[in-house]
Image (cartoon, rainbow, N blue to C red; front, side, top):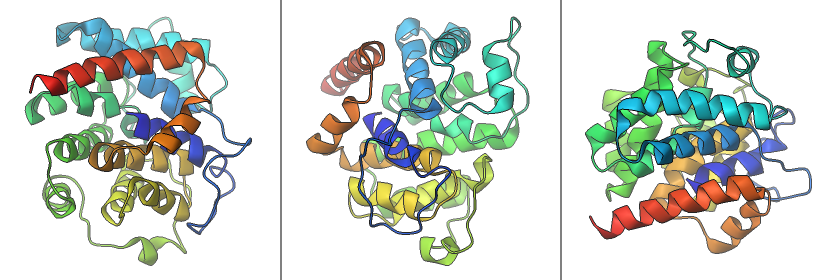
Length: 267
């Protein structure tokens, strides 16, 4: 899930200052960690707390998203999600915002089967984004991650997404000039997936995502989650991204990655 974090950090300085080109410096002093990384790590912590017994995963997801949202309150949360974070009675609010997809990457890495991936995605998404489009956006992202981990090629991933989630009947060049900021799953997730599908490397995927503008950090986080699973994340890019995480966040990422590595070894 380091790919998610890289995309978030690199895209953070372009969210309100879109750049319609792939030619830019990846990391600068203006980059920051945003809600995409914070909530992705909160979901990772929920999975760790569940210890593979997922009947309470939804409860752990609520607890950790509220906990980390309150620990990191200035990370560009949406208004309704911010209210949910600080609510004494946090309930799902029928959202189809792209926050459903940007935070779910850990589910794609923790799953041992495609069915598990879908189940995990649904459990952590329905606690807030229980609108059908919110559920679909999260599931499509997790599906892309799991299929990439399973060794499917880009054409196979494209065909699956096209058949089961979104029509992949456009190109980045065809939308770049007119694509604008949008916070919905249905107008973010397909574009983020296409940024991966048109890529030739992890870095190229991130550059693709940011080059179309829009909600740049979230687009790149979603793209990065799938591209990271498919290509892996180059060590130099990983090292630079990790410098933006504090000790608490780095600890969660490290613990999660260690467990996932053990799962991979026993496949």
